[in-house]
Image (cartoon, rainbow, N blue to C red; front, side, top):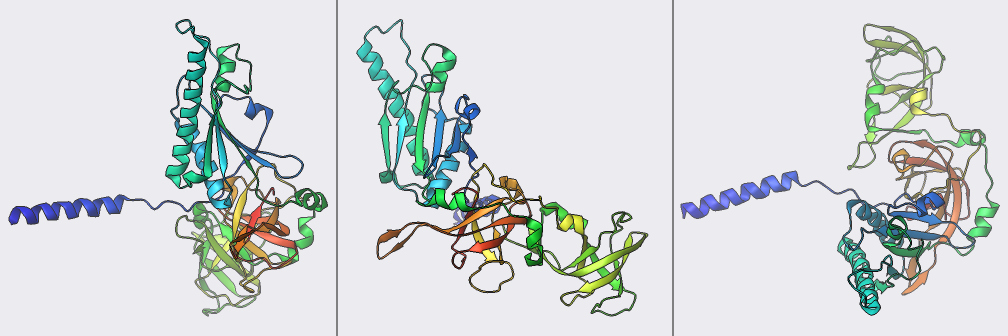
Length: 411
């Protein structure tokens, strides 16, 4: 009995330690997909890219293999994970995986039929390796077809080891599942001047994980009142250098986590304060104006930290970056419309840039068992960012933007 209890105790301890060491996986998000280029297509590395064309764009995936091998290397798995994430989140239809080989004449095997059989078997095993990876990640095996094409359709002449290496591959082509009216929509969009929309920007600012140390808490005021007002002299617990640009500081709320799985935060603007002086680790400022109630315990931050300069004109990005609309940051309503700001879960870490134009759409849905195609709903541009999030102002909406909406750089 004692042995049984001891074994149970040891097993419980192991399980407890294992559960403590288990890390929570990040939620699945749309991958950033770079545009296809000659350099990328001609490289020996695996890749996924977006091929822009008239009408519906194509997502091209190319997975390379070593000679006479059907084993996926780590780089290939990273590429296939991006494909999996795109297929899973976009609900793309059935796909076909095409396996290929490079044509090699063997000095040992002179029977051409045996060589063809070897190439077909190798190309099939490569396609199967890719299918197994995608299915193990969570795709439905019934939606995947494989084709073994041997040395057919070479992308390079089979006249050298270097060229044959390019042909040792698996290819998957997926049609971008968005809109039939893509060309008409994208052709009608015009670049705008961000400064013309500044009055509509929200009072929300985003902070990276490492920017907490750059803002300071208001710990006291000369007037010795907990509620602050314009003209009050305030003291913050950080010594800032002399403000040569004479830019005001922004009075903000306590930073609040956006989500639990990263350290990006948001703050709300309460007003502005002017720099007075520093002394022994503190900074003295004077409140210039307040748009909301501010208190001792709130924070101040330099303008150039919280609000980065925007380009003179908005622009279209070449990379396909797609994110979820998480919320209307001002909580004005369940739906957002023109001149509202929405928060999306893509930021600088995903390659998204300030001034980038974002197209908003409702993803494909189903009504009474029948598919309802994706629908373009509006557009805007990015005006504030952190590593994993961006604020997008809607400059034109065709209908209400909801939390089910998506935002993308390329339709």
